Length: 460
Image: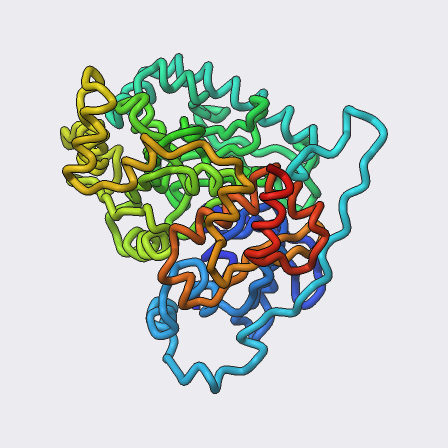
């Protein structure tokens, strides 16, 4: 049966051995909620079937549960994928359903020296420095490689865009051999193996301060095709998403970069990294504010499964696969105009000539009965707390306030029937500073619609 460590690698995640207890314990980012080392794997548990647990999303189980959770399959489909006989789930041993739950790791101590200070995301300063140097070196090598430059141009990425995103090429050393370095030289724990930097196209992820926080390498041959350098952050790549009315969701960073090059200014883009990854909090804030989400995951079985999650959880999400090929890069190579493809997925009123007056656009929207467009054009600017009060009015939604942890709770049937409204409420509760200040001042464990309405009145 496929091991959990192998399934993690299929999601572009490499686990690191952290302890020898319970037959060996491995840590990595979570395929669902990201992080760095919150995902725990015990490959030898359950008679060699393995088990896992994430301290971030507090879920765990065996290999079957991994496939159910992160590939979006049913129990029977998961068994078929793993080559196992499907049995009545009620008869499965409890040890197969949940891995041992660990206490949350204590916060890392803050060293006094700024040279070794902890970095947000728990990435050592040494790793960040090495990643920046490696990325710069690879970017220079890309400029010198006519073959690699030609390759990314065939996917719709011109040289200026490649420079914007810091794309590079690791040509290796000693006649094109993969690079190996001591893990400790990058600030990583020594696990008996060297850090592998394979030959291939290097795709860095940068944070808002410009620091390189992830290095993903697309290998020209061999498996895995995509490799994430250990120590990398696993956040989504977001491109031009701040304030974007429309966002396109894709799997690979290269596809997001292709869209940024071929459809500039038309939309924001989110690259997940794989079809089962869920948006991190920053990405969720952008998605919640967008009026349209075009889901363009790869045209394959995994992409189909991932798309169902998006359309089920976002009322604004629309299944919008590329018309040719598997992904936007292949579609561009097949001659598809990506800007036209995106425009076709947007409300027609958005595509009216910018020379038309606002009144003309509003009249057209009314004629086509597009209330979402009218709301985007004419909605009055409400304070966040007032907007939250309107959203939760006459609803069963409550905000659970547990100190630093806040969450929205409501009956499942109401949630299913009011998905967009629930998304808007959750976005305000999770990300808006004024709303969070209101929750703090309320000092209630459960905040209902009446309490929000009172707070909105008191805060003006």
